[in-house]
Structures are given as C-alpha cells and as structure tokens.
Amino acid sequence: MDEEERLRRKVEVGELLDIYGELLPPRTRELLVRYYEDDLSLAELAAEAGRTRQSVHEHLRRGEARLRAFEAALGLRQKRERLHALRAAFARLLAQVPPPFRGEGQRLLEELRRLAEGDDDPREAHKTSRVPPPAGPRRGARRGDGEKG
Image (cartoon, rainbow, N blue to C red; front, side, top):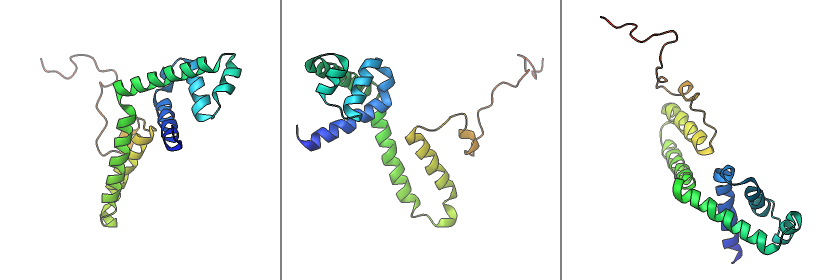
C-alpha cells in the first residue's frame, strides 16, 4: 500500500469512527482510535493489550469492516460529503448576489453549516427560521375543547 492510499484509508476510517464509533464495542473502538488517530503501531497495541500483532491486526480489520457495513447501511458519511458539496455550491452562488440581498442566504448558509458540522439542535431551529415551530397541543387543553357540539 503506497503512502497516498494509506493516508486516504486513515482519513476514511477516522471519519467513519467519528460517525459510527459509538456503535462499536468499546475495545474495538479504542483499538481503532489508538491505531488510526494516535498512530500507534501494531506492535505497540499488541504490547498494551497483551496480545499478538496478528490478533490486533484481525481485530482492527473486523472493526473497519463493521464501520464500512454501518456506512453501507446508513450512508451518513456519504450524506455528509454531499451536504458539504451543496454548501460550497450555495456559498459560490450567494457570492454573486448583491450584498443588500444576501441576508436570508447567509442565514440559510449558516444553517447548512450547522447541519454539516452536526451542531444543530432541532429545538432551536425555529429561532433562526421564518417558519414557525410546529404547533403542539395547548397546555391544559382537553380533547373536545373548542369543538362545537
């Protein structure tokens, strides 16, 4: 495996760990983090765990396979990449809009940024949106209140 392929794989597994890491068993997640993010070698991981290098290697391969299976089933990484691409395209289009008319576009771009980075809170979305939050039942309202009968 050449250096470019190794780097691509490291980035891919890192992104998959960010998205699906909590779905893995703790030991598997820890091994993947230590190998891909902390850059420990198989020998170092084996010494830490009291296992053979081959055992650690197999555990890493199974963990990667599980992450890829999660991605194949859910596609969250692919959706995140698509969202980033759409956000960049929207920003390019927004740059062509005259400054006095950019306000709403900037707000929407910021909302896309929050979605892409995963720090959106759906309970807070109505504060920046012009669409009112969905109406829920009134506090203290009972079935049949307000109905003519």
